[in-house]
Structures are given as C-alpha cells and as structure tokens.
Length: 260
Image 1 (cartoon, rainbow, N blue to C red):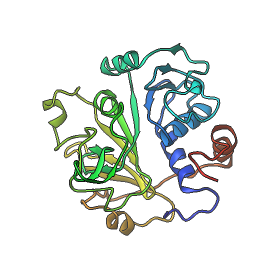
Image 2: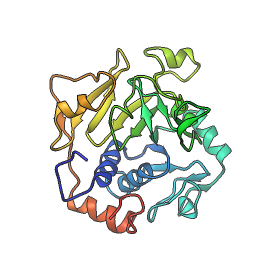
Image 3: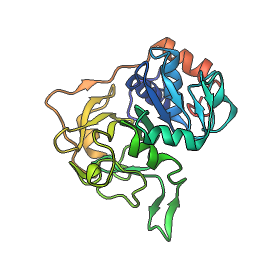
C-alpha cells in the first residue's frame, strides 16, 4: 500500500474512489466485492437514485448492507424487480446499462482484462474465477470501471496470459471491428496508486490523478507498459469521516471486503 494515510485502509480508499465515479440517476452492473461496496456507498451518499444491477437478476435494490455475492437475498432488497440472469443480460445487450464495474487480475494498456488464468492456460500457475458475466458487462455497458488493488508489473502487463474481457482490444476502432457497440469501452481504472482514464485518440491508459503520498515514479515503476502522463496531474480526493462511518458501520460492519 502506497497511500500515506492511517485514517483509512487501502480497500476503503478504493471503494470511496470507485463510488465517486458513479453518478445519480444512472445504472451500474456490479461485480462481486469492491464494486458492490462502491456502488452501495454511492447510493447512500451522492447518488441515491443509482440503479444497481446484479447478474443473478436483482434490479434496482436499495442495499441495506454488503451483499457477499451477486445472487444472495440482499441483492433483491426493496428492488424494482427480482428478475433473471437472462433479463439483466438482455438489458445490457440492449444498451440500458451506463456503467459496468469489475475487478481484474491482469490488465494491459488498452484496458483488456484477465480473470481466467495466470500462466499457461493448460498448466497455469493460478486458475482464477473466470468471466462469469464480466465479458458481457464490458462488451455492452457504455462505460467500464475497473478496480485493481495491487498495481504492479505483474498486473499491468504488456500481454495478458488470457483475454477474458475486452477493453479497447488492440487500439482505436478495434471494438467496432469486433462487432461491439460504438462508443463503449473502458472509462476509469482505480488502483492503489492512482486513477486512470483512456486517451481518446490512442485508447491507451492515461493517468488522471495520484493518490495522496504517491509519486509519478511509483506509477511508472509498477507497470510493464508505458502509461500516458499529462502535464498536470491532480491529487485524488480522500474520504470524509462520514464516508468512513457509512463504509464501516452501514455497508461492511463485519469487514468482509474492507477488512478491520
């Protein structure tokens, strides 16, 4: 962890940073873990009308606390519909999902991500959970948000060990050539070091802000590919005491995702 701050831990900071990206009166298709925490925080603070969508069919719940999977009962709490995987994937394909929100084990400069294997596919060093609905979420949501808690040369890679989920594939125009909807793709990447976007022209990863206490050198040292650096780089905002209270007392009081 490179964040020089004792008031909050890394995962709390990542959840807060993810929540800030989400807007009121928008829809978000969330994956397990930090994306759920971030969406719940956004809903309990600046985005009360955020429509949260879960893979197993929960549409628009008002999350009372952390749902530990995308199919458990809290994903249907005060929801507008207890639907099905078929219906939520159909909504996504029809273009009704504003944000997809996923974690990743590896990512390249174009926002393509791997959650399948580390190493050779047939004899991997580690076998990961796989896509689930992640490929669909990234393929059809208007904007994709990615959280990687441990940015390093092993997670920011030149070439993925396996392409699970498409970003901008090999650059400008590649998504469209692959048959994916126009004007969709990765939007923000959040790591322990900073927040990133993607250059409009080249579709390559571009730094937006550094987290408190993090240097440009750390960002460059912890990537296997060159990251575009603008002339002016902001400092990421920090969570308030109220944000931390909500995270610790209302969303994840057991510390299942955020830790203690």
